[in-house]
Each structure stands twice: as C-alpha cells, then as structure tokens.
Image (tube, rainbow, N blue to C red; front, side, top):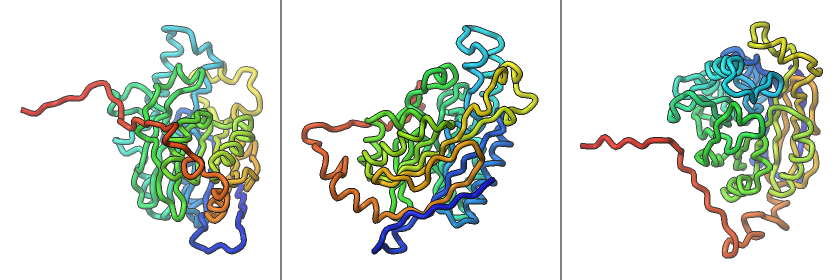
Length: 332
C-alpha cells in the first residue's frame, strides 16, 4: 500500500494544536468479513507506526458495498438469486456484540489511535437479520464510542440496508479537535451535518464506498460551510477484489469497467483549500498533519452554530434514542 504524506500548518501555532490523521483507501475482500478485517488491521498498524492519532476507512468496507444489486436485476421481487446473495451478505455482516471488532479495538489501544470504520452491522437489538450501514468510532483506549447507523440508505441500497436512527449522531474529543462523521449521502443532509456542528465538531469524517464524483465537490463545500477540516475517505473496488467463489460473480462482472469504485479520498482545510487532493485508482494510506489554529482562525468570520446562528428563530431537535421494536418490562 502506497504512503502519501501531507502537512498543513500555519505560523504562530503550538504543537498541541497538531493532529496527525490517516485515510486508508483500501478494497475489501468482498463478502468476506474476516479477510477484510485483516486488511483493516494491517492499515491500522501501518497508521499507528506512522504515529497517527486517527485512521479512517470507507463506507460499508466490511464486508463490502452491495455492488451486485444494480448488476443482477436486484429489484426483482421474491427472487431466489437475490435471496441467496443477501443471505451470504447477512452472514458476513459485523455483529459488534459478538466481538467481531475486538482485534481492531486492541490495535487502537496498542497504538493509541482512534478509528472510524464503515461496516455492515447485524444489529442485535433489531433481531440480527437486517443490515445497517454503520460508521463505528473506536477511541484511543480501544473502546467503541459510537455506532452510527445510516439514517437513509440511498437508491439501490434500500434493497439491502435498513434505515438507521439518530443514536450515533455524536462527536468525540481527539486532542484539540472534536471529531464526528457521516455515511456517504448523509453528508448532503443539512440537518444531519448541523447536528454534529452543534456539538462542536471541527473535524468532519465523510465516508464513501468510493468515487471521485462524490468527493471532489462535497468535501470542499462541507469544509467551507462548517469552517472545519473535512476528511473524505473512500473504498476502492476492482474486478480482482471479487473472490472466485463470489455468488453470481460472472454476472456481477459482466461488462465491468476497470473500477466499480475508484477511490477519491482527500482532505480539505476549513477554508475549502486542498490539504490532499483526491487520490484515485490505488490502494493508499494518506497521512496529514492538521492544525487546530486554522479552525479557530476561520471561525472568526463564520461559526455556523455559534455567533452566526439564531437559535431564537430556528433550531434543530435531534432524537438520539436507539430505536427498537419492543421494550420489555419484566419487573414483578
């Protein structure tokens, strides 16, 4: 995996303002949870050895994005082929309560590094038979700080993913920064962004399945709107990343282009300038040193939920209850 390093600093800053981050643009071993987690672990270790304090990964990376849907007549109702592929997708999902992420948590603790990782979650509190596109935050102590289930799956994703809830709309302290994240098209949802801004977010992590068309405009726009650093981290998907035993592999790859997802990971500064321009078509670990003083400077003329807000006129109400079908009261 190639290593790209970038620095973004200003004058008159102090070392405590600095944060070194990493973007792991990697491909999954598609529909294979354990093998993909091994690749994730290797990237966490590589970022840890580079003395990064945060490493980020793309949306639904473990065990992969549902690329089969648009290529195999995925909207056909009650179809045995679609049921079979979904059954395998579900089998390879991540059950947090079963310890599937324990090895990643251990590495986070070992290297004192936080992790943002996109997984397909089999949610134990929702029976374990539906999949949620979940962005998991693991802190530097190796503890899971939040698991944000994507609020609204996009287009064909709705044929494989269930809609999430607001429980994971949370931010986390990381050095001088306050970090939060959203999945893919959630980064287009103004109120979801505002929910994070209102909690003091100044480092935003946007995770994507992979695509320059997603990251080249959105990253800089969100940075300028929020006056925050924005990390857009993408996955990568090539025909070679589908194992030979992939269900319906030949049909999925028929007339396939060179990339099903071409990456596009990048970092924007709070003024909308590039810290790292989008990286396309390769597995790469991008590292960069960010400077909190730049955030503070940009907030001088615009702070979207601070001095440039009017909560007496407009405000946002966020329900962070973890949704579930039944609440059982077994008290005598």
